[in-house]
Image 1 (tube, rainbow, N blue to C red):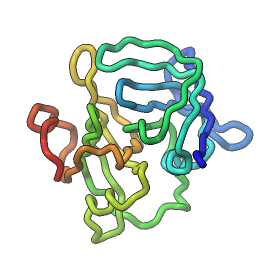
Image 2 (tube, helix red, strand yellow; image 1 turned 90 degrees about the vertical axis):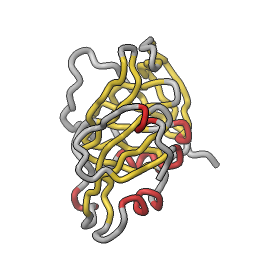
Image 3 (tube, helix red, strand yellow; image 1 turned 120 degrees about the horizontal axis):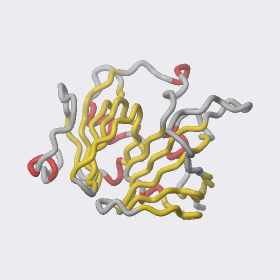
Length: 198
């Protein structure tokens, strides 16, 4: 049976900021998802402490009130309702604090770069001490969180880079992944975009 989660997004009236927790303790955050042909954005109240848990627990997402931006052209429109499968989501990131500290195991952040379709992501994957970061990435559930990440994607005026404290990458859609120790930002060029996986 397919598990579908209904997500109701709204478009902010002003600058994108993280709202204070509501009475139930859930925060409203900026949510951005990247699919094959564009960027979906809005604001949402998460139903889990960690975005990656929410994404891994459901196969489909019924999204309402999403602003869709077609890439690289940049055309935008508000879509009142759409259904997207997890297998169609390359990347997702949301504003707000990281997950519950009490649930975190002792890990070491190691830099990697992942290419998913037209998108490049540089960030830290967290693995147990002594475990190769690429091996850790490949053995996780489909949606893998990277911290202190940079997302690079094509826009109407060239390549665009956005920072995200946590960016969740769909491991199943990764074209390639490689280590990036010491890389502070993405150096995007034909050699990197066309590189074969390692």
